[in-house]
Amino acid sequence: MRDVKITLKPSDRTLSVPLGSCLEDSLYDCGFEFPCGGGGTCGKCRVRVLGGCLDANPLEVDLLGQSAVDEGWRLACQSIVTDDVTLQMAQWDASVLLDESAIEVTPRDGLAIAIDLGTTTIAAQLVDLQTGNVLAVQSDVNPQAVHGADIMSRVRYGVNDNGDNELQQLVRRRLGEMVEELVQQTNLSNAVFAEVAIVGNTVMHHLFCGIDLTPLASCPFKPSRLGAETFTAAQLGWNVPGSPKIHFLPCLGGFIGSDVLAGVIATRMDQSTRLQVLIDLGTNGEIVVSDGKRMLCAATAAGPAFEGARIQMGMRAAQGAIDRVDIADHDTADPKTASEFQCHVIGGGKPKGICGSGLIDAVACALQIGRVEPSGKLNHDGNQRMHLHDLISLHQCDIRELQLAKGAIAAGVQMLLGQLDRKVEDVDDVFLCGAFGNYLDIPNATRLGLLTFDPQKVIAMGNTALLGAKTVLLSSKDIDSRILDVCNRIEHFGLSEDREFMDVYVSHMPFPIQR
Image 1 (cartoon, rainbow, N blue to C red):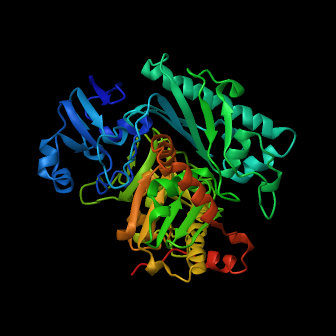
Image 2: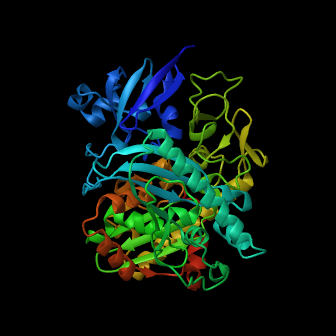
Image 3: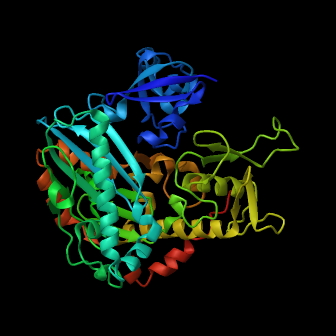
């Protein structure tokens, strides 16, 4: 089978993929986002055909409209590549107005880099400060992960035997390499780089900036330094043209870092009078609620299940991961080989494991057909494993990990809303953020009780940490005062310090009974 070439604009990156490949699978490793999990419902994976051909299906016509389809717009999650094609990537082109969250660019000379330093994954984008366009994208696994998949494992390693220095050097070195790779991708070594903006949770902030982790190792988890930190490229040993300043944005309190601050900026929660909830699903689950008067935040020990860690056959959302699961259609399947489940594998081929979104789907489907009970117990002929696809299966302990994670998120939301004397039913908007939120099936998350809201109120926002960092770089008008206002307004609520939290947490661990 011959390969075809995909050219991505405005970055000019080219990909070579097998004829007949799903465009969604081809773009996973390019940092392109699919906020509704590739379900064809959000419309945020729009691409425009500038050269070549991509056929449109009826779903794309319904969602985008016939006029947009005639102009060349397609949904990446619905497209099959059958010929060489050149695509305008709407997420990377500031001239394309995707929705009301588009960044208002204040043009200035030079280039800048936005970095989301996550516990599991690092994402970086090189942006043109004159146009706001994304010129290059990089993503990688956080190299610190060899010393623990979750936040507290990283903290424990860091406070012992000079571990913090080792963790600092690992991440500083990798970020420096990624920055150099971004420059090389664009052949812009003579360009002027104005600045670099980094966001991350409080532990990542402390490790990168060289701040003592000890206050984060035990209750009451109150760090001594939360503010912004600034470095030169020379201080970090980075080879960046123009020697730009590197800013790590301020944290908000406890385990609530600048990634959440960036999410508030990106969603404009700080400028709204509606009752809104922001949920950042990742290795550490963070929640913000605001009614326009008060803004509260909390971190929940959701654990790394959403990132595929601590799941026996778990992995992050990358090539070879099962990312979507449906109930199999036995009317068309071969009864000798058919599984109860139909699985989608990123990139096609045999699966290597299952990522967080696949875990959510699989358990939701199993609950629907009675293979998992509302208590979480596997109802599978006494077997502790449930076969999914090929050699991949789920174990009873995987379902328990999911229950712990989803219970922590749901309980955290209820507790924060209670501080405002409000209930889940009162919420106007729910912003679902974080890399994991890119692939989450919202109806399935609701079915499991991870999300307890009306699904119509949930807005899949993608990586708001990276979007917020770009907003800070591109919107110089009033951005400093907005950041200061959020830092001053927000109230940090310690869930573990509240006597009611454990009871609420336990009440959210079972799966809702299907009606």
